[in-house]
Length: 241
Ligand code: BV8
Image 1 (spheres, helix red, strand yellow):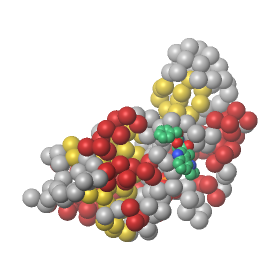
Image 2 (tube, rainbow, N blue to C red):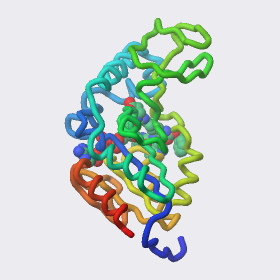
Image 3 (cartoon, protein in one colour):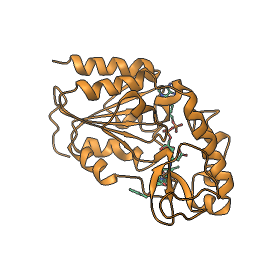
Image 4 (tube, rainbow, N blue to C red):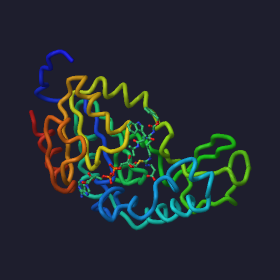
């Protein structure tokens, strides 16, 4: 990495979000003390092996989370990122690890769900990916190939390749500002994005309730609840003349 000339005003932003940005909307995080992985073993519900062993258990796990989508709303942090996308005169890409639909409901469009989406289904017989707002089970029928029992939640499980990694890598290689919001930095390849951004001489900022696993890989960190620190940082960005 040659000598990095800090960009005064960013022109190309990449933003990574995790469960922490949806916490204040009532969505459980994974690793906090009463997080999802403290209640269920991720090997049983978020791996292809777990699905093969007990598909009904996995379907119930995602049906429960999918039903929860109806009762939640985007919060001030989601809306602040949608505002940044509207008002920022440079390029911006929002990459989320979250499978909830709060970013798009807040108005974000330049969005990649790198770990998939809760309200979508994937047919393992014909590869169809489709909207699936309701419950899913072994009796569910694929709307395209008609086969029964081959539908699974369209989410990326451990050991599976995240979605659109080529677009994400290209944006990281070219960005001059990388923001990481509400993620603990435990899961790869997402936890390694800060390194890719630093290699591109980008300014790197962590916005999180507390220091994450990767805290010391960021040039700057602002700690506090997302609904407070994200709107504040967006205001700072948009007011930098
Ligand atoms: C892959 C979807 C090959 C399902 C998820 C290198 C080293 C070691 C291991 C690996 C490695 N490379 C790959 C691995 C294996 C594995 C991995 O990383 N394992 C970990 C456990 C060590 N990775 C994979 O298997 C990935 N696939 O690598 O394929 C490959 C390799 C290279 C390039 C391409 C392909 C696939 C992983 C995806 C798994 N699916 N989710 C579902 O949701 O059910 S992961 C899931 O957990 C989330 O999506 C997220 O990605 C991850 C971490 O969760 P976070 O979002 O960070 O949430 P967490 O609870 O941990 O933290 C919340 C944070 O918010 C905390 O810091 C907290 O302080 C903060 N917070 C809380 N409240 C607030 C707040 N912040 C602000 N405001 C608040 N109010």
